[in-house]
Length: 403
Image 1: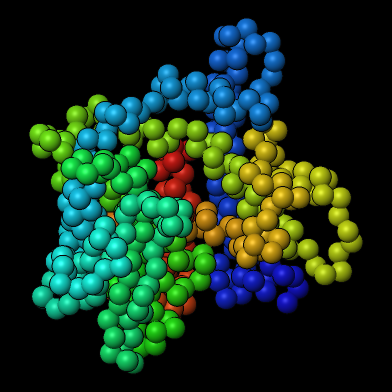
Image 2: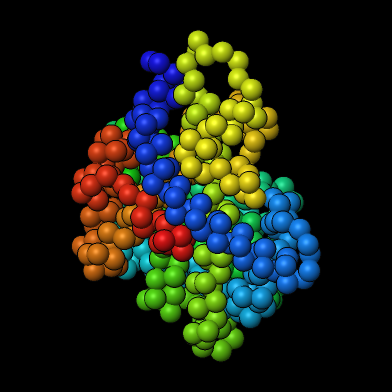
């Protein structure tokens, strides 16, 4: 193969660096345009305060926070009472899965858990048959790894006739005894995300455990989880779980609108800095082994200009010299996967919107065609079979308010 990027992507969904670049370049123009509009808004704030200087990268966070506070600020003390953990989990996350796939959940207090705060549920299919078990480990603790993740304790396999056992882990601060666990909307979204991974493991229907569930290419594995995030704000689902923990009243419409608007704030900046890094990764690893040594700064500028994303106020999230993800961090020629899977998720949500939304028939198509297959079929072909065409970035751009 000609380059390291060719070698790495050969067994990924994208297949070639050219395919990954094509999708990233679909995002470039609208993202840069939006970032420039955001920069102009920040410059107005600077000028309004008689700052007397031109916006620089190090000014962005300070002035964007001023804009966010004035136009998009969410008061967590107002919204948290509507996101009580158990309601989010059972009336939101589990409810959405029931609406989509007909599954139900039963607490299994008769089975052992590794800590008192951990809960276990059994998931049943619409016909009453058992599908598998899921642990929910939601609270932070001193000895727990940070962040949020899903893991599989037992992969589904027809070969050994074994059902899946998975777990989802969050790091929500544990409330004092007798007090409810109240979440931010980011934490709500994270719960839906990790459960999307959980469904990928639970719905697996394959012969060999090596091909089960989330054992898929990197540029596919985050697709089901990001897709599942879409149901957090789906009106039917949201109305079922976003209720005041004391009164049971639904969240006021004005707060719901604030949540929706806040999701698109500063997305030009956030998307562009990541997009620049993804393009740099692919450009570096597309160099052949015979290429001469490069001047790092010149190479970066040339690569960003080539793809039309060079914009001084928004530099790449990681410059080459400290881009540890791609230099020994395991993401060499693979950093694009974050954008790739986000595109798949938004594009699939658009398919659902085009075909009637959260229906049992649509859920069955996604479950049988995507979630159940694991790595038994080429990931690109799985997506083509489901979506009916190549992935397109337009839905993601709309979702982020960039188009």
